Length: 115
Image (tube, rainbow, N blue to C red; front, side, top):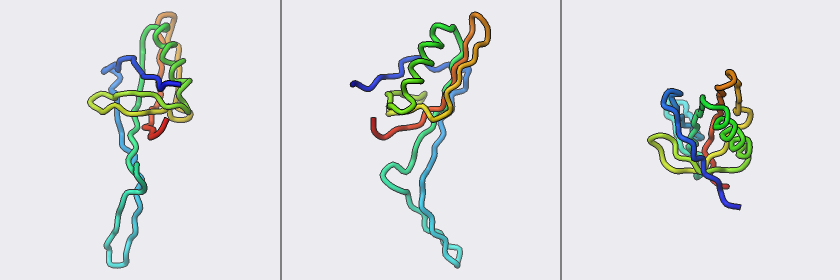
C-alpha cells in the first residue's frame, strides 16, 4: 500500500509550531567536564502541533485521515520545513464541535523514520 500524503493547508492563524526532541547520551566527570553525543542514527525527532478550524465537512476529512495515521506514516511538509514521514502522536488527536458550521481538529505530528 502506498504512503498517503497530508494535502490540507496549514492555517497561519493557528500559529503552527515545530519543536525538536533530542535523544542524547551524556557522561559527567568530577572536574565538571561533560561528554555529550547523539544517541543513534536519528537523534533528533521533530514534533509539529497541527490545528484546523473551519467547515465541518473539511474538518471530518482531516479527522478521518489523522485517525488512520496513528500507527501508519504519512508524507507531510511543515511550513518552512522539509518533506518527511510523520505519524499522529498517541492520545493527541482531538475533535471539537464549535457549532453547526464550525469544527476544530487538533493533533500532534511526530516525525517517523520508517513507514
